[in-house]
View 1 (tube, rainbow, N blue to C red):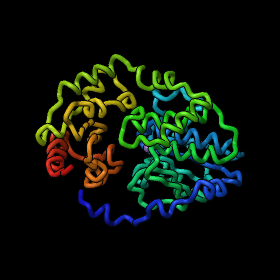
View 2: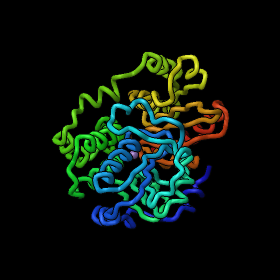
View 3: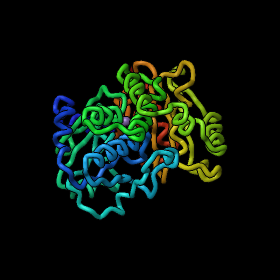
View 4: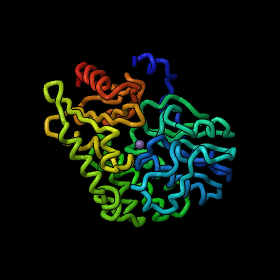
Length: 336
Ligand SMILES: [Mn+2]
């Protein structure tokens, strides 16, 4: 819980990134490839893995999509084609190439770390500002709204016929990481790419209905509990709340139904930083969201976590009450 962790990391920045053309040249020869995103995969992580898999398969590679942790990928995205991820623990192969998508450091690899270590070669494709230099090769752009947008650039430059599925994967990555094109990371390129994806067959209303308007009643009841506990700190600039393991048990809500919880807190008028504390297997997962000029990525790195300026997170090995105290102390120090 100090800045020392950040300072120790090698200063490898996007200046060291391969170009799109160099990456395509690197991927020219068909190989055995494993692709994996981060633990607790979100729309960008899953969409990026699916899109890259589709591109590499079109180029003749043999591809396996891995889950960093757990037995099954989130149901929320199971409307996507070829949604056949396998647990990293069930994969016994030794890939020629391992591609990590949407993660800036090894810590978020979960069970996939051992596959990564035994792979012949490794490539990281990512847009996080705190990429720590892991892996043999790196294609990164911290200005990209989503990792899926970097994959879209690869697809567009590859000469491979663009399928509707490829466009849907990248659209899911983009729409989720930009909060439906509303967060600070929403760029002109994001909108332009979304237009290209629509021309390739994406129907935004269909996809957004699946992602945002297909909630279970139990998940809405969890929202209700979260809202009932909302509290403020730092003269109202910080809003926070929490959900417990008992909530999940009593309501029967699944972990992957709760991706929208931080945004409920973020939506409150006048708040600049939203903090969600979530009990998870005896630990506390903390999700941070910022609206104004606050940098919650920096906040998260003080607790050995990571993320972007506007969205970040970390995990604490303490009780819920201890976590609240620690996090609110840090929030009070936060200068925006
Ligand atoms: Mn991302």
